[in-house]
Image (cartoon, rainbow, N blue to C red; front, top):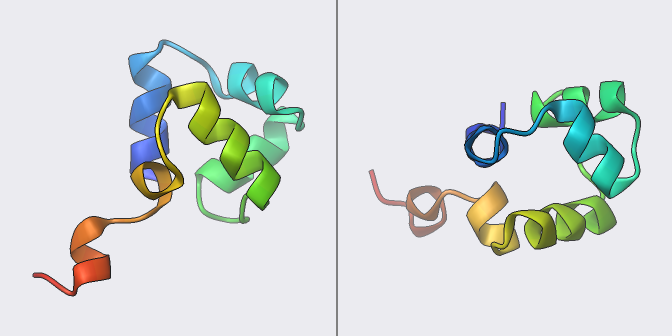
Length: 70
């Protein structure tokens, strides 16, 4: 589950279908991707970052994990 993506979507009071429509994919496909069962394409990831006004790092990577910090 991508909790960052979920939180950003909820902060903006958007449903999964709203985000799916904005990035041009089927709502069920978006659900599978947000829940971690499938991966977003680079194109979709860039569109999400633009939609939420953040970087790809902000959406998909945990700084602690990248820095190997516990």
